[in-house]
Length: 353
Picture 1 (cartoon, one colour):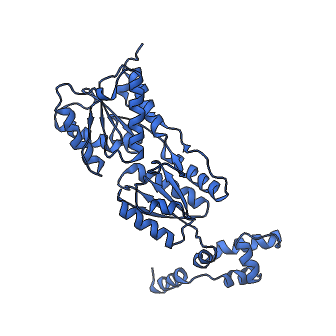
Picture 2 (cartoon, rainbow, N blue to C red):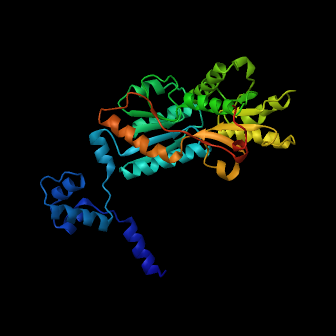
Picture 3 (cartoon, one colour):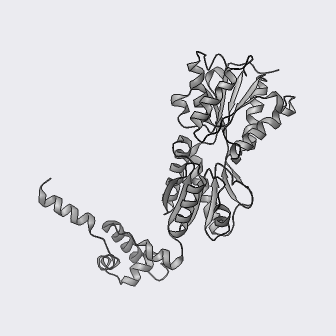
């Protein structure tokens, strides 16, 4: 590109289009242009409205949001705090939410809390100082500021993992308890009784509820909690926790036939150690996970999983936010429909008569 064209392009890109420029091009007053851009159209003709909107599009005008945020004490920004963006499930959920927010004219500010309470509080403070319209937490942890923040004027919505105390909180996501029950039902239907559980911290509501649903249903079938061995090590990295925890089952004289991992990432780690031990993760045992990680069909066709399709989260999140803002918030958790993704080998198992 010639230097003269580069200079011209740079000037066009960096020159901010003002409201006065929009009004001049549309041949209306600045006040009229401002009202139409802000959605106040009752005093303008249809032709004037179309002319202003056309001019806005042609000039690429974007209104400054800082002044409006200060006047209204809120902005178009919605903060989304994810517990671990290294987890493809959370990244996919965040992406779905971003698309849905964009369609409604909001801007998403995405932060990774790394499952750390101090980092979560740091971002909560920042969202408050930025006058965020709402804060959405994908995988909340208990933190010092969380309760105080929930009692503030800022909308707080919990996604995929209910609030640590589950009281007076808005939630959108999987019914973790019922998902645990459904996994147990499926295993029982196929006569699977020798079951082991790998879990990370049970201080998180999703893991605790999944485990509770699984054990409650197994107990109804005569398989009591003491009959279900558990494997666990401390840590926030589920790949490492799954990998190291699996050694517990490999050391047992009678290994479980089914390894239920309370997240797909735990299952990835457990699978790796199983392979390294020279076992066949499909023929020698059955792996179940939770979350239906979007990578499963590509890299984990050995894994059976249960979860909510990520694309459902965005529309449901925005719908919940709009209901809260209109003072008609959901009175119960918004549970999204979950589904199984089963590997081919599991379909070949006989059903219990």
